[in-house]
Each structure stands twice: as C-alpha cells, then as structure tokens.
Length: 446
Image 1 (tube, rainbow, N blue to C red):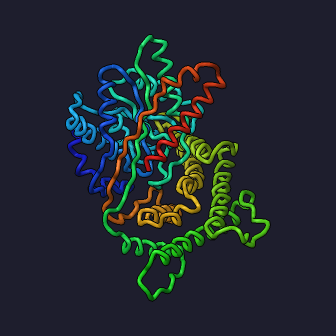
Image 2: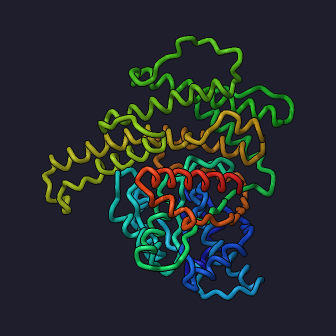
Image 3: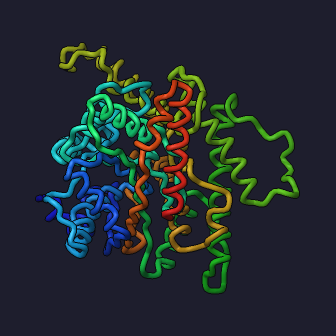
C-alpha cells in the first residue's frame, strides 16, 4: 500500500541516477480485459502470466500503475467485483541487486519478487519458486519475456522461451493435481512518448556527444531540421563505429576481420552499411569477452550476453571464497580483487552489445519521430558514458514523458497443452510456437 501511495511521486522524481522516470501521465488501454481475467483468477477459474514489454528501466512503474489504478478503475466502471489488492508476483534478474544495491532486493522481496539467475543453464531454485507461485500464488505472475531492456519503444527484442515454458508447466501441474483452471498469457505493451517538443534539448545532447567524441560539429546556418538531425545522428553513429572498430582492430584484431572489399556496395544504403559494420563489431565484442571466460560463441546474441553476464557475476562474486572475506590474507584479497576487476572490464564488451542489440537499419528512417531520435541518441549516450568510465550511466532527461500501457488479448495455454504433452519434440515445437505468437502479439500492441 505504501508503494502505491508513493507512486505519483516516484513517477516524477529521479530517486536513483540510473532511473530517469519523469513520467507526467500514464494511459491504460483495454484494462477491462485484465479486470475480467483478475475476476476469474480470484474465483479460482484461471491462472495467468502478465508478459510485459521491457523497453526501459521505468517499466515496473508503468506495470504498478496498471495494477494499482488502471485495473481497479476499469473494474469500477464496468461493475466487475474485485478483491483488493490487485497485484502480481514478478520475476527479476538477480544481477539488478548486484549493480543497483541490496536495498532493491529487500524491496522486491517485500513486493512479491522472485530473483532468477540469467545465463545459467538451469536456475532450479528460481524456476521452482516461479513455478510454485504461478500454480498456487495469491496473485498472477509478471515477467518481461525479452529478458532485458532494449531502449526502443517500437521494437520488440526476440523473446526468451521461459514464459511459454512456465505456462505449459503450469497447465501440466494443474492437470496432475486434477484442477480445472485454465492457463493464460496476457501480452502487455508499454510505450513512451514526449507530449511536448524536445528538439532543443535533443540538439544540445547531440552537440555534447559530438564534443565528447571529438567530432567537429556540422556547420549549419539554417534552423535545425529533421534532415539535419538525421544526418547528425548518422554521422555520430559512423564516427563511434569507426572509433570502436579502431579499438578492436588494435587490441583484439583476431575477433574483428576487416572487410575484404572496403568499397561500399552500390546497392547498399548508408544505413545498411552501418548495420553490417555494427553487427561485426558486436560479434567481436562478444568474442573478446567470451575468450576471457572460456565460453563458446553459441546461440543468439541475447543468449551469449546472458551467459557472459552469469560468468562475470560468478567471477566477481565468487562462491568458492569464504563468507568472511576478512579471513583471507591481504595477498589473497588482492588476487581476488584483481580477478574481479578483470571480469568487470570484460563485461564492458557485453554491455556494449546489450545497448545496441535492438538497433535496426531503418528504425529512424522509417519514422523520424522525436521519440526515435531520442532513443537512438540516448543509446549512443550510454556507449559514450560507459567508455568514459560510468558503469551505470545517468541518462539526461529530454522532457516529460507519457506512458501508454496496452492490455492485449489473453493467449490460452491450456488449449495447446495436448500438443505439448504428446512427446519431447512436440513439446519443444509447442513452446516455440507459443513464444512466436506472444512475440507477434506484443509487436501488434506497438
């Protein structure tokens, strides 16, 4: 209750340097759908997962507003009887408490959070807790199926299969216990916009990045236009790529192979050439980190990032050392610190990739809106800030934002359970198809 009461203040304040907030209004769309599902949940008819988009670190506030205000209001308007509180358990990455502080773990545990170790082959403890709460918990379970933020309100990253798998496990557990509840996954879209013009602040941020990266400013006599800003963003991106390519060629030449033909192909746009270079750079960054942790370059980029993150945390927060760190000799502590520092440096390669994994060639060109300009520029700000030595960059505020939370049509998992339980191959196919359907549903909510 205290968290709900503080929500209006939290929307406006920057309570932590890495938490921008500055949200002036939250619009909830189709909350009636979720109110009806909560009614059925409270009546013992369904169990469900809230699968929400995760473009920004502020998303939990939007979700909290949806459940604490949007759903109860819709229930009142449509005479849907609901018991209070309308809440959810939720899954979060245990790495958040490492870089944000123990206070976050304390808060999340009291709000119904479940820590999951991303990157491990199987976090049995976390999965058991999530599976048990989905089956018997007082509230539904909320999960971000993208696994991490991507900085883009209008691009959904490839989904991890965990949400679909949990849904099928729940349907299986219910069947074994002779229970009749249906299992659903509810796609939740979250999108941020700027209700007022942000161009002057965006122009100043671009100038700041040009100065920080040693890029001479464009000489422009006229008032900045969309075309001028587009060329500035593209030019800054090209400059950053060139600098980073030079870095990897110098220090990690074995991972970044020069193009056989440096001449640009005539059928390739500037955007496409940038994307080709970016993809090669991201692969080189991952390989440089994977070599340190002795990991194979297997799976998707997101899979590789998760494995690297887990390997990094394990090297920094070593379980083989005594709980009482003071019991080590000064020399042993020094070696432990040295190993942790090495791991932290290697994780920077992975953070670079995380920041740009969702960047696409035509994202800005297709719709040159203020929001897309801001997203691309802020991603470049993150890169520059991290290279300058800021582990958790404090993004500048470009203006007040509005959040739009859209409840999608629930996807029934129980209707697919017969296919899932047929055999191992069918189970894998059912999980893949459900994950793809959820991906499509989230993309349609943009």
